[in-house]
Image (cartoon, rainbow, N blue to C red; front, side, top):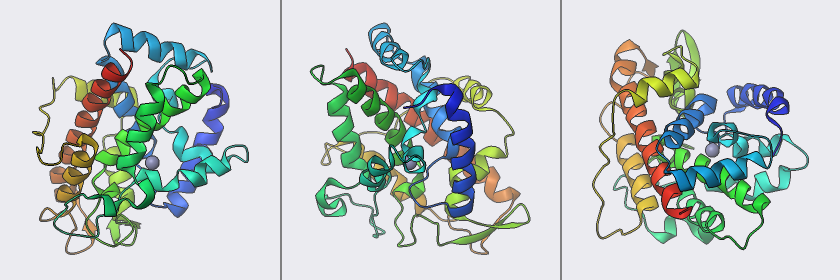
Length: 273
Ligand SMILES: [Zn+2]
């Protein structure tokens, strides 16, 4: 973890890198992850909020949004490069299957976002672990719960989460993954606090119903993302992201951010009580 002041430069560097390379592990971009964290923090109960604030204060941070993008920055820093490599596959799950049914073979050796969330929720809730470990776990939980709600982090096609699907967007070449990570959100022209205010003002989000046979909320969130990615029109026929696409799909992205924020709050309230 780094101080907030230092992080600015690193964030800028990693953002530039993500625009250039956009590997599948980069998700929601800076703004999306921070919106999810901000929305969640508003919905924490007093006990969970106190513990979150205590863990954040160990590195002079104050808000969940301050640590929401750290897992995407690990590989940019020599000190954390190995951790970044070891956790690279925990940002997504490849369904490679239009039925969007999650099952353990989709997650070999626990190397996917569904098991990543489970692993770090367990560490966060284990009070015998050090504050450092639990603080890192908190960052991973905030980040991965954001990731699993980005439809292309649990997509149905074999195309590196839409990274291989080229599109035209705002007069330039891009790819569908980038458009969903950040491009569509940036069309709002809002900083993350203002964006989160806007979404929070829409009131309580109605969460999708549980899928009983699954009995695994994290897998369900991945299945929901997979199904969104195969909805008609999600992959634009003409490989062009026009105003009509944004008009239809940006509300879908924003609904996922609201769901992620609420679910993250629920997980933290339960885990830190
Ligand atoms: Zn990620």
